[in-house]
Each structure stands twice: as C-alpha cells, then as structure tokens.
Image: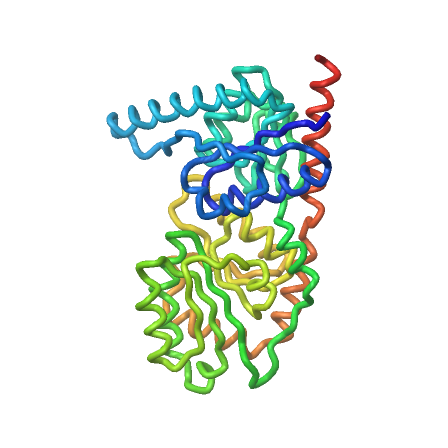
Length: 368
C-alpha cells in the first residue's frame, strides 16, 4: 500500500522548489504526495507534482501593532483547524515542512494529531517560523550544520543538504563554457520581489557607464517585477544592449547553466542551485533580515571561492560597472569559481531527505 506524505511550504520559490524536488523523488519511490501551502503558490502550482494542493490560511507576523497581531493570530488559528481537518482526512504517514509562515498551521496540526513530522531548514541559520515549530517535530533536516542550537534541537539535526529540482540536475550536465576574449558575455540577473526591484534600479545605470565595446558584448537576461519590466527593457534598448526581461522564467535552471556570470540574492535555493550547476556568481544578500540568513548562505560559496558577496549598501552603479569589466576580462577566474562552486554541491540531497522521510515513516509504522 502506498504511503502518503503531506508537504507544506511557504508560497515562494525558495520554499516550494525544495519541496517540489522531494515530491518528485518520493513519487519515484511510489509515495502519494499532497501539498499544503498558501494562495501565492498559484504560479508554481501547475508544476508541483502533488495529487492535490490544499490552500491553507496563514499570515506573517509584521511588527507589534495589536490589530495586525490579532489578524495574524486569527489566520494562523483558522489555518491550523483547516490543516487539522486535512490531516484527519488524509492520515499521512509523515508531514514535511520547508519553512515560511504557511508551514506553521500544518506542522502544528501534525503535532496536535501525533503525526510524525520533519522540518527542513534550508538556510545556515534557523528562521523564526522554524524555531517556533522545531520542538514539536520528529527530525530537523538541514542544508548545512546549524550551530548554537539548544541541546534538545541539536539532537534532532540531520544534515541532508538542500534538495534541488530535477530540472536543475538535468541542467547540471551542461559544463561551464567560459567567455572568450572579445566574445559575448552572458549575464543573468534575478531576485525575489525586493531583489528584482533593486537590480532593476541598479543594472541599467551600471551598464550605461560601460564603454561601448564592452556593452556590445553583453547578453543580459534579467528578472524584473511586472511594473518595472517596460522601463528596464527600454533602458537597455536605448543603450543598444541585447537584453531579455521577464517577471518569471520557467526555465531558470537552463538560464543559469547557460550564463557566464549570475547576479542574484543569496537565498538558500539560489545558493544550492548555483553550486549544483557550478556557476560563478556575484551575490547580494537581502539587507535588514533579522537572522541575516542570506549573508550566512553567501558565506558558504564565498568560503569555497565560488562567489563574490557584496553588501547591497556597498553596491552602486559605478562599482558594478567596474565589477562587470573585471569579470569579463578574467575568464580563467570565472572558470575556477565555477569549479569551486560545484565542489560544495550536494546533488544527492533529495535522496538523503527522501531516505529520512521513509525512515521516520517506517519508525512510526513499527510503533503502530
């Protein structure tokens, strides 16, 4: 009889993509997969390999405003009752959460119903939602060892790596092709909503400062927010730069694999995909994060000499222009960075995590 897993993840790519990777692997092993998330998953939902997607009410904690806190509490309570009903109906063998506040109701409901659960922490530091949930889970899967955890949580920690999608593993077969002197230079730029806006404001002025012979070599692919796309595209056209802009690229793993240099945030999924694909990157960690998780993620590739992190406050158009010229004139440096990035990859992370899911489910089966 097929076992059932209920996956739960926040409605962003950084949370959903590792869950999607695990879903694909468990399906290959004969499992039935269901997904609990929020309404933001719609743009990813058609590609998620789940029998059914359950939309669960949730809310992020924002500040200390009593009204907003009350709204958050009500939505989380409603989501918990919704998730409890889903779990009672499905009777999953295990629940696996991938972070973000939409995971809180299903993971808490799993604890209420005595359902075994696994929490996956993709970042180098544990996020707020995961910290609140960690005490009630059966096991904590991590991308890298997390230091300074309380003793009761450290004992649950199992390093699996951060799963990447099948599309990433397929694209990883493409070897890095360093730029040639005088040839085209393929630059890929992407980020979440805040990252996309920052890069939309930063890149065109930086490109404008490049000499004509340098601009003519650029082939830019850039993720932009829908409201910024027209102005960014027009700016590149006015500069005579070959550029393709879009709010979202369905084939992002292939786009990364085809690039000479990537400029992006350092979210956990981005860092994992850059390492598995083996591509050099200029990383701009999201500033202002309470846990500084993106800064911690960036250090993994920086330590391996596979990426160059730059704080957002330090990255202005003049500096970026100089960095682009430096990279374009150093193909050997980029090639070495690509190899170094791949050296810290964990392409088998999804198999390790799937093994853990089966181990937790089998232990529960032995008890029942």
